[in-house]
Image (cartoon, rainbow, N blue to C red; front, top):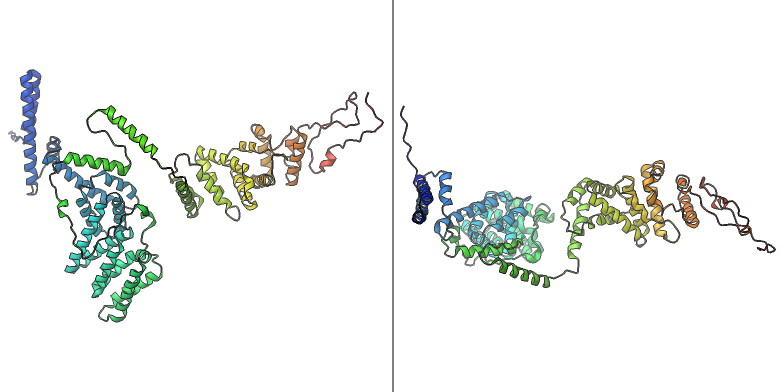
Length: 617
């Protein structure tokens, strides 16, 4: 049986040579070490040469095993070498292309920071080429690509400008070649960039006038497609241009007899879309409106101007100052993403830390504090719109849980729910169910709603009667469903001195809501619980007869006297009649609230007037 001889690969002599040098280093002394060092440099040079040869042969169809390619690339570590920069360029191209192909409405907020993580200054040509190719292949994704470009344009305007110039040049060439497909893709992308205010609407107007100057079926179709995408934006920002464009469409529709019926019908459909206020063709979808107006940078590009597309940015070029340029972009990336700049450079770490501390102190001194509470207003607006746009309380809770609440402002969520509830004409259980669900989701929300009960009771006199009633019903719902603890009732002191007319109405509606929800019998059983007695001392006072009578009269007036009479079965000391001498003590009577059906005057004995002839020795 014969065995085939295996030919050694190119990488094997290198590996054997390195292994031999390591063994020599172990056995020998300084001479062996010098020999190993010089041999290693030679190995790296051989690896570079072999990697260069393979790159040149790759276009000829030579297959390179991935493991062998990675082994060669791992040996190239000099950042100033052409081979290393070429590898970094290939990795940059693959990364940008992969991120652009992955972007969609759901993940755009996560993909864009990853794009900023790549060197878009060096790879701006790759970015523009990749996003133009992806947009042309999938026109329905044009708004998403335009939104991505708009975000990048706020921090790197040179990238947005280069993309606009390339799209204009592409449109020119396609228009001269009568390439309708490329014209539609270019105009669609430019229209959505105009909606995002990356490019000025004057460029769109020039393109429309060019297409409609000598109307043909294809040019009118492209113009209609362009107008559908950015018509709403033009009417909002440049109404004069929009009027002129639609006048031109109207004249074409009435005067051009050589157009096909299909083209005429497209113009009529465009006018119908305009009459419907662009309902099906909004300028920017809500989920893609990601750039603040003050951050937008708009480029003014002339359709007939001399434009440089900088095709040289699409190919690899050796950079003699590679490390300096990369370090500069790392600083820019840290500013864009808000990251702390890492100390990758060698040097004195103590000096770096002290300089950073000084800069932080200066930044704190120059920090501008917003006294207008703009962030708080925006947070409340977001909560309000989320509540109003929800179909049910479960959907509302799900959406509200996804809102990123700043630290220390968690109380704004229950406060806004209660305020929205109080604005309704009558109590809507939609809000009560929302509050109940939040309380049962997390202990944090339970504590916040309990704090809200205390706050609203203390300030209830500020609310008008209808809002007061609804707030009481809201908290009555939370208490009846055990969403918050009954110990919050300890804030209530039912007496004449510590209550107002508003607070008494609040207490009345609160207990009525609870009794309607769980029944009077269960309410009485709950109030008999021994654990609750310390919290109910203020509602059912027994320390002072005056406060006790006030509470008895209050619950009798609201129709709960008989049901809650057990709470006053503590003996109440009565004042001594003035006709009785101190030396003759009279047995003390006890008042028991056995029945509230009798008038209060019949339950309490009236003191007799003192005779004038009676004297005390």
